[in-house]
Image 1 (tube, rainbow, N blue to C red):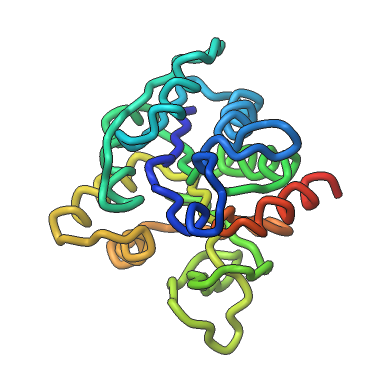
Image 2: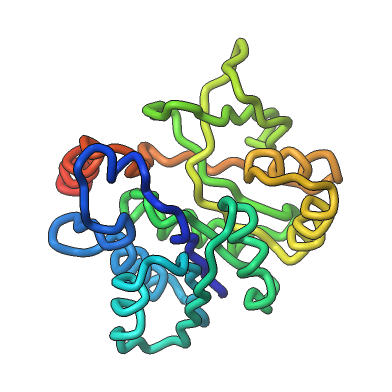
Length: 232
């Protein structure tokens, strides 16, 4: 299965809080975020690894080029306006029937990720399996409303009665989702959350997969929080 990582953000909030290391190279338990994800993907059947980084992150580019990996690694160097545009730049390299996409600052437990991927590979009647969590520690969470059998009914910017889960920033999708990505770009949609809404609007069947906790590294305090989480 193809795996892709969006690592093209500037990490401006971390810089403002005094973190000088580029976000993809922030270390948790001695391992860079980027290296941790790549290792996790290789453990879960990666046939290709695809990473997009912005043009200014020379140190990140150098790190990626230094890796010796058992699967092909494609490095796309391009600055983009946001994560959805980065996804679009990765699209042509996602040639298989299924792929997994994540942002570089997404931290979850390895065992949970393994079961998530296995569930997706076994799925036949859905177009995507979206990671969700009821751990809410985000400034602007995207709430995921589910119905029977955890099928996703809608994505909301605010909580509604019965809202339990938020998006975890890990997306397992089939090729049908790439057609919707092209439609989103043609419509001028620029945010991943609006792309996810379009997936529902165009009739794709998405299912939510709950993780106990997913942490995004958005602030300096999140680094210690994520390291402690992995050690628990």
